[in-house]
Image (spheres, rainbow, N blue to C red):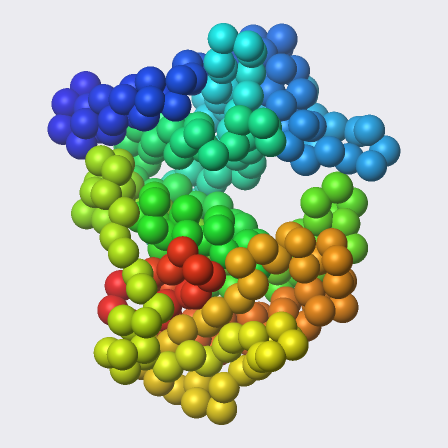
Amino acid sequence: MGGIAGEAAVSSERWASKAGVEIELVDSEGAARELVTVLSRVWPQPDGSQPFPPELAWALAHSGNYVALARTEDGPVAAAVAFRGRDADGVHLHSHMVGVVADHQGANIGFALKQHQRAWALDQDLARITWTFDPLLVRNAYFNVMKLGARLTRYYVDFYGELTDGINAGDETDRCLVTWWLTEDRAVRASAGEVPSSDRGALLASGAVKVLGPDATGAPEPSADCVAPVRLVCVPADAVDVRRTDPGRSREWRHALRTVLRDAFDAGLEVTAVSRDGCYVLSADG
C-alpha cells in the first residue's frame, strides 16, 4: 500500500498506539456481539434492549462493510459501524455509529478509531466519509471540524424522529451532516495531529458578527444582523447538562440554533471552524 492510503495506514497505527488500543475489524459473529455490548454501554436503552442488532452488525461486517472494535488489555472499549452509501457525489462510506465507553473517553481512542476508519476507506478507494451528529453538542462539532478536518454543510430537522435511549429520549433529533473528504489538505494535516486555532476574540476583532449567543439568563439571544459574511454562533458548552436540568431551555436552544444554521447553509455558508469555548464559525471560505 502506497501513496496517501499508505500514509493513512501508518498514521492510523501511530494513533492507535498512542491511545493504547488495538483496533480490529469484526470477523466473527462473536466479535459482532462484543461490538453491540460496547454500543449498549455507550447508548444505554431504558428497557435494556440493544441499540444495534448483533445480527445486522455481523451481516454488515461479513458483506465487506466497516465494522470495528478497539480493545485495551481489559477488553473492548470502543466500536464503530459504517456502510457504503451513494448520493449526488457518488459512492462513499457512511459512519452510522462510533462510540467510546465512558471510562475511556478523553484518551484519543475515538480519534484513533476515526483514523483507522479513514485508512480503511482509502484502501477501499473511498475518498469520503459522512455521518450526522447533534449540532447542540459543540464539543463533537469541535472534534469533527477541528480535530478531524471535516466539514459541516447541511442541517436536518428531527432526522431520526423520536429516540428512546438514555441520551436522546425526550429531545428532537436535529442533526448536522458531516462530510470528511479524506484526501483534502485539512484532513491530512489533522491525521498528523495538527489542530488549527479558532479564537472568538480575534474573530470578533477581525469583523465577525455574533448572530446567536446566551443572554444574561442563559437563554438564546439571536442578533438582528444575520447577513454578515462571517458569523459566530455560540451555544452552551455543555448542552447535555442543560437538557438534563432544564428541558425547556434546551428546546429554546435547539430551535434557535436550527434557525441560524439553516439560514446560513441556505445562504451558501458552511461551518469553517469551531472554537473550544462553544462557537461555530460560519463563512463562505471553506
